[in-house]
Image 1 (cartoon, rainbow, N blue to C red):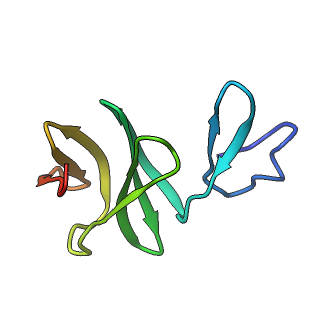
Image 2 (cartoon, helix red, strand yellow):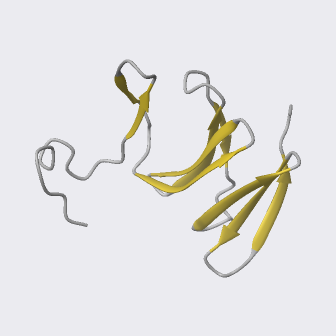
Image 3 (cartoon, rainbow, N blue to C red):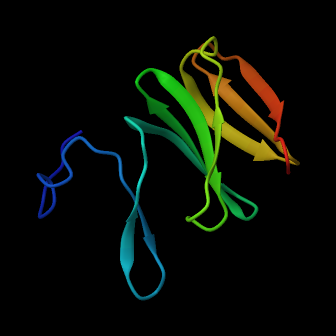
Length: 105
């Protein structure tokens, strides 16, 4: 991808998330190489993240407290995430769909 404009060089090759509270904007720290997918569902933001060849789901309801759910390495290259009725659904590159009940919901 090509980044142009005022901030192109400052944010080169980074995946960033920002929060705005009607007064100011702040950067949300993410420890990832890539944001694979995003989902806003019910009262939560869920991100599918990739870091050093590993994947995880992270979720928050307030952009302050985050829960991390590592994805087992045998599930290669997840592409998408869905959430419904306390269950996460992952779509993999080979077309496989996986479901897992969210612990503690």
